[in-house]
Figure 1 (tube, one colour):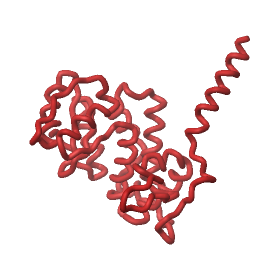
Figure 2 (cartoon, rainbow, N blue to C red):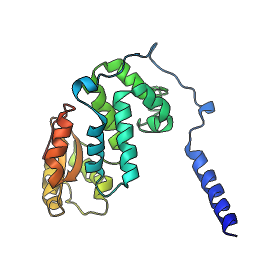
Figure 3 (spheres, rainbow, N blue to C red):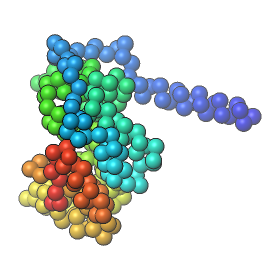
Length: 231
């Protein structure tokens, strides 16, 4: 009886999971590039290694991810930054899902059917840091660990969608307020919980970590030439 229930569970679980995979036979992949670069990013030369992402994944996810989920995230970040071609191959569905509006028709724009989005971005940029910034942003945003907003009204919604800040109450945004000022006000609330918001300097991407980890997170990101500060 127990075996029958287990088999039924696995069957139903398989049926549910199957549609989550894209049916590539119905997708017309199309790249705008004639050729992809065969050169890999020089991560080691710039002191970027897997351990950087192991530590970063741990401190940005805190208790929201299990240890196995933290490891999986670190692996994806590292592979995406160090070998975009392999990343697109190994994590095909994940790679496409991290690209907002992939395969979706947008007004006045052609749909993005790039089969290897990370390799394509690396081919176009040919700059380790510009590319790594982009790749990290796609993945952390997809995982609910990073948000972007220029206006406070948008930030008010986005901040509640960060997985490490779920079920918390924040200030209401003021009509004439920008995201930087809004996040600064909310940092006073998060301080009571031992958390802090960090925002990409001169930009509007932001993340959250423990106050005790702030300097280490900033140091790790600085190795990627990303300057995150307290708003």
